[in-house]
Length: 416
Image (cartoon, rainbow, N blue to C red):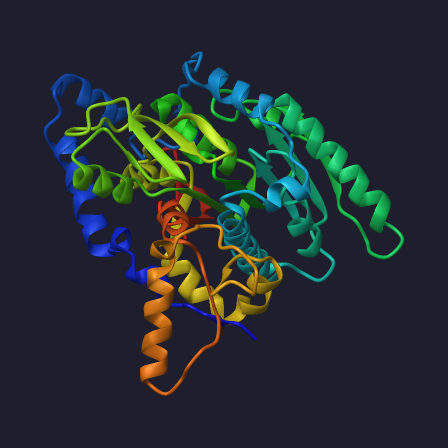
C-alpha cells in the first residue's frame, strides 16, 4: 500500500493560507473602499443590495463579450482518448481535481438525502456540465433526474451521447436517472425557461470549474446565481469549484508581473492589478492541453452578498489543500483508484510526469522525515510541484438555499 504525502501540499511555497488571504483581500478592499468613480460605486452598491429580493431584480440583456470566446474554445477542444490522456503532463492533476469533485458531490448528496423522505426524488442541475465528466458521479449518487446544460453545443452533444452509452450499458443492473440536455449560456439566459418542467424543484445544483466566467459583469453574475438558486428547494445546496482570487493575487504580487506560472499553467492579467474591479477583472488562463481562454476573478465577499440576495447562504468555503486534508481519511481508497496522486519514487524503469527531481523535492523531504522518526516509507503518493501549484489555485464552496417568507410590506425575505 502506498503512503500518501498528506503534508506535501502545505509545504509548497505557493500554498500559505494566511499570505494568500491577506494579499488578495487587501487588493480588493482597496478597490471596494476607494473606488475611482464614487457615483459608479453608489450605483453598484444599490444593484448588489441583498435586501431587494428576487421580485424586484431588473435584468439587463447584455452580449457578454467573452462568452463566445469561451464557447468557441470548448467547442473546438479535441476529445482525446484514454491513451493520449495517460501521456498528459497533467494526468495526475486532472485525476486529483476529479477526486476533489467526487468527494464534494458525495458529501452534499449525502446531506440532501438525510433530509429527504424515503422514496422522494433527488433532482440535480449540472450547470456548465461540459462533456459529461460527472455523469458517473450522479449515477453513483443515486439521483432521480439530471438537467445538463453548457455553453458549448459540441460538449452538450458529447454529454448526451455519453449518457446514452452509460444507460445502455447499465440499465439491466441498476435503476437509472432520467436526464435532459440543452446548450445555453447560464450567465445570460434564464435556465428555468428551458427546463421540460419549469416548476421543477431541485435538490442540488453543481457548477464545477466554470462559475468564474459569470464575473465578467454584475448582470451576468446575478443571472448565473439566480439560475442556481431559483429552482432549489429550501435546504438544497449549490456547490462548485472556482479559482481562488486571493491566491491568484498573492502570486501576482510575488511575481511583480502581469504574467506568471510554470510549465503546467500560466496567468496573464488583462486588467489593473493594483485595484482590480469587482467585475471584469480579466486574465488569460492557460492550463496545459485543457484551458486557454479568458477568465475573471471572483471577489468572494461580493459573491456571498449576491448569493444571499437570491436566498443562498454560504455554508462552506475551503481551498483545495484544506479540503483534501479533511477528505483524505475517507477518500484514501478512491484517490488511489482514480490515480489522483503520482507514486514517488517511480516504479522500476518508470518515469515521473514532472521529470527532474526538483519537482519532487517535497516528497523526498517527507520520506526523509518519516525515516528519521522510525517510520520509513518505500513510496508515497504526491503531485509534482508544478501540478500542485496549479491545483492550489482553486477552492470549493457550498451555499444552502434558505426559506423564503414575506414581510408586512409584501417583500420577500429569507430565513435559515
